[in-house]
Length: 183
Image (cartoon, rainbow, N blue to C red; front, side):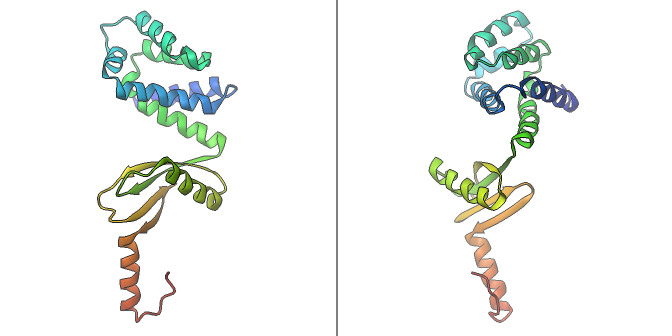
């Protein structure tokens, strides 16, 4: 499935579910992706051309009807009939973009040397929410180039709070004769 088809699927799902709870649809999409990532048999089942569309639709209905989002389950059935689960991640990304715009959410990445606890991640999100005046959702990615501290990428801007960045600022300040107001 090409990129414009993925975008079309995302727009269709968005327009169908806009009247439903967008946050729950986002959670449901993330849950399907999680199931596909964690359960390779489920993923292979959805991607298989040997399994009939009807069989896939029955399984999807049984597994995901608990979300109580009728348009969502219908969407998954249509995606199965088009053999579209190979690009499901792209559809999710496109849907998140539309949904985030509607809900005033900004997504970003926080790079750290080690995994952040949920509590620490929420504190960082809260700090950026105060700065940006929007809801912030950050994903933690481990980057072994970060010696200490963290780096946040949000809407094309990078906020670098790493030790390496601090040392570079200190070096630049010393080279300029120490006349810098950097903290």
